[in-house]
Length: 257
Ligand code: ARG
Image (tube, rainbow, N blue to C red; front, side):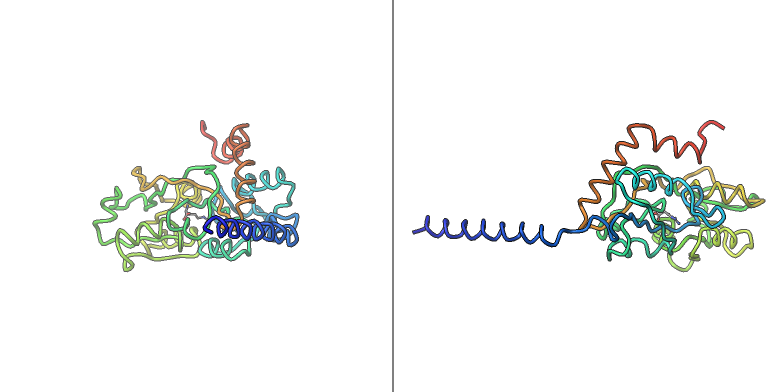
């Protein structure tokens, strides 16, 4: 009797599976939001990863994503949005990928998947050249106000460390830096490469030699789209192995002067 029930159950299961597979085939799941396109969400005020050259968005992320798209036979379309909206937009299926010098964090992993990492970032502290803040400890223990880009790891870590009252949040990293030059905040915590670009573009600023946190950058992909994640990972791994990623990074961040 027991055997019979088992048989019935397994027959029912096979039937259900067949049905599921047939169902899958008939409404073939799309690889990307729009067929033939790879829609990338970014926040394009983050040199050298993404920034405007005229009305074109260029940079390390744009070049890497563009090469990934080519290898996948897709056309890259870039949408410039608030950094803070990227993860939610990928999660809700509005964009295929988020690619924005984005750090892989445990918290974001609850909402999206991340590809293999293609670059490293270091949270850094920018101060005025004559600032009394000489290291991260001084920044944390003093009564200083810190400027950050809303929703970035710099924001998350500093809020954790010194509390809301001493944080000023800006939509763009550049606005936080402007607030620093105006004396509205005492320091800016941001990724090392944009930090360097902002310091180069503004007189009288410097980066503390004590970095704050070392992070991995990756693209985020919708959790329900393992196929796209796997394809991008395959392309990225090949681009890492054949030197394409290193060459793109070297173009924007020359390692030896
Ligand atoms: N790496 C930081 C983070 O993931 C900052 C990234 C900001 N990127 C940008 N395109 N504005 O939170």
